Length: 384
Ligand SMILES: Cc1cc2nc3c(=O)[nH]c(=O)nc-3n(C[C@H](O)[C@H](O)[C@H](O)COP(=O)(O)OP(=O)(O)OC[C@H]3O[C@@H](n4cnc5c(N)ncnc54)[C@H](O)[C@@H]3O)c2cc1C
Image (cartoon, rainbow, N blue to C red; front, side, top):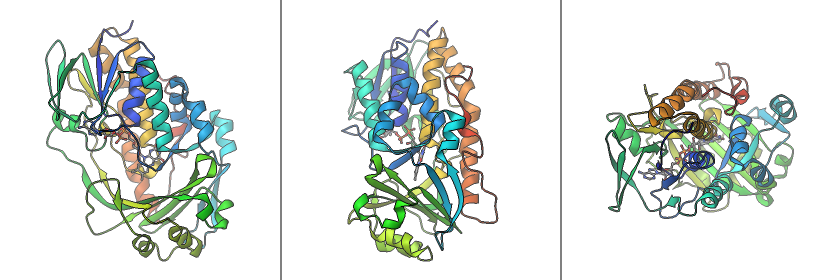
């Protein structure tokens, strides 16, 4: 029997918030999503969507459309950062054989747009941009929510999907803030025609190095190369995902990498390079307080080293929908959701941190998301 929630509010229209809205809508719930940005859209960057998350997307009805606009390279390489020599190979066909589907390299904006269209198709009035969540007040009957623009509304349940710097989390569990974890990442999208020819042979490659790594993979059927460099730094970086950076600055941090990797950095078009300081948080004891819970980066913000943050948000979203469908009260739904998700979310959060240390320190053994069996998870099959 479905939980008796007539109105559910989601704060944040990122990948997690939109997927949660869709999972709930598809199970018959009415959802309103409030987003602080004046226009709901994603940044230009890549994201790897692994089979564990694709199972959620399949249930949400967007996996096939996403696959059609994304890439799924046949080989994923790990290479020596100084010579470019291949030291390890993972074949997508082996992943497909075991998982029934491969790993997708996705433009974030494509995934976001598909989720948004699906939510709007179910309910054209579900999305509310220009609404920055600032406060909530809950009682036995419901939750009142207020926004910076003066608007307020009431619902049976509130889901905080407002990302790493979550205001919902700060209100529920004050006194703890994200901290800079000493690493700065660079990101760029490079049009295929500017990418050095050598990368036609190794399109998806990770180059671990002491205190840094470079990762690249193709997006949009190979029309764009996504390049990420991540490394330790002594200096603090200001908040934000889109701080402009220069190719010279990027190259300086990676000057001992193979010549073709430096050529790849130099091929970034003007204005196409951004940087940000990575932030980390300790796991919470619980994600839920009364009628309010959280998902995605709001609940379990993680470093990017296992490439699973968005995948976890998608898994959360599906389990939230399933929990509401299975429960007969709001309390029961939130309890089922958190019980189903808390251990996995916390583990992946901690393992990402561990993998970050291994990735940048050759003396430590690496254990990727594949090695850790993270792709085996089926968000439709786990009990809720
Ligand atoms: C370098 C890097 C590479 C990554 N690569 C991968 C990868 O390959 N695979 C993978 O699975 N994950 C990856 N991730 C992680 C992934 O990007 C995040 O985990 C994912 O985007 C989290 O989604 P979310 O919806 O929880 O939060 P977000 O995407 O941050 O969305 C939060 C939304 O809430 C809105 N919001 C914030 N505050 C408010 C407010 N007060 N009121 C209203 N709205 C608000 C924001 O504007 C935003 O739209 C990577 C991350 C990084 C940094």
